[in-house]
Structure formats: C-alpha cells, structure tokens
Image 1 (cartoon, rainbow, N blue to C red):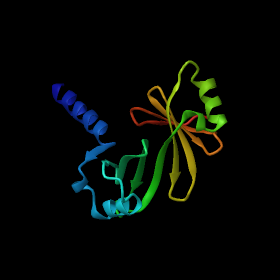
Image 2: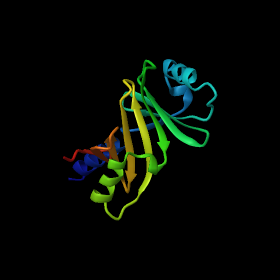
Image 3: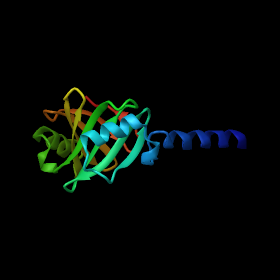
Image 4: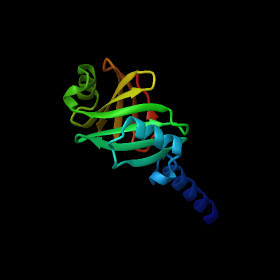
Length: 151
C-alpha cells in the first residue's frame, strides 16, 4: 500500500514540474538564443523557461513585461506584451464583470502568434482568461495548467 502511495506521489510531483522548467541561458539551444538576440539585441536580462518542447524568454523593455516563445529551431511562435487592463477589448472586460463578479483583473497581456493572430489574456484570481481580438471568451487556464473551455 505504501509503495502505491509513493508511486502516485512521484507521478504528481513530476507532472507538476513538467509544465515549465527554468533554464540558464547556456542551456538554451544556440538557434533559440540567436533568434532572440536578433529580435532583441539590447535586452540583456532574460529569464528562460522550457515549456514542453518550446523555449520562453521573459524580459522587460521600458518597464513593460514581455515574453517570446520559440521552438527548438529558433522559430518564433508567439509574443506576449503586458498591457493596461483598460486596453483589453470591452467585451473581455464585460465578460469578466459578468462571469467573475467580485474579482479584479490583476494583469492583462496582448498575445500575437506567428501568423499574426491576436488574443488577449486577463489574469483573474488563479486563472488566465483568454479572449480573441474582439474580446470573445475562448478558454480559461487554471493555475494548475488545466484548460477549461466555456460556451
């Protein structure tokens, strides 16, 4: 019985740490570092994470938090830029007010994927709410990494 408990505990711990892993710059593949340095040559203070097979660089430019995600070959997959909550589409703010009454949006971001598709993220409590460019709700990502799509 104890053996099963320890196996289950090891599985839970490994699955929690598998979503994102902090990396030193030296552990990031050269094509990824090169692509980042080409896009952001003046940025020196970068925090790297490995998320599944991709690499995320988090940094600040002019006191604005930003991040970029690359695949292992250095192809840019997405950029995320912190925005003021007031810059979210009106429909997104209305969705939060209606469906998360009594909670406040603590952070907001504009996300652009490699094809130029824009989405928005609103951090509410322990969840990230994702909206399309018009502010229509797409999904909720809980702090534990689980996606929950609502209609």
